[in-house]
Length: 129
Image (cartoon, rainbow, N blue to C red; front, side, top):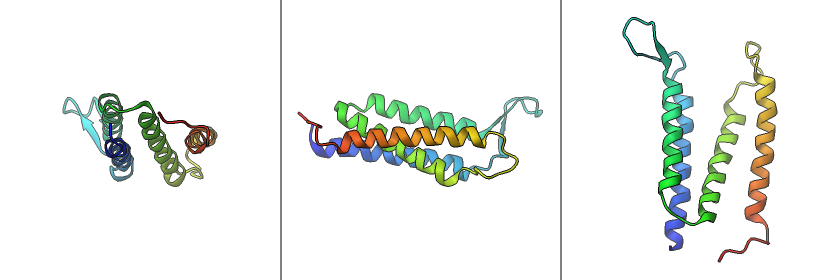
């Protein structure tokens, strides 16, 4: 495969990830899907679009064939964007949010994972055949 095709996969993964993040930012949390019609069975629209978007990103990486290094780079870029958006947009100081401490802890662990993954790509020991 040529390098243009390899870069195209990473850019496509980044664009899909940004669109997936926008589903959480732009869709109001009060919107729901009423499955039966009498408000007895409802599902938040952000949950449905989030799951569908995540499946699209997973299937994109599975079915768009490329080298192993390109796959790893694309997943690392996607994880970095998700981690940055969590840090920027999540309301950690909301007094009504009881899970903000746990989410902050796992955000720190995610930051460690992002750093370790990028160090792998920027290290001098990487040999691309």
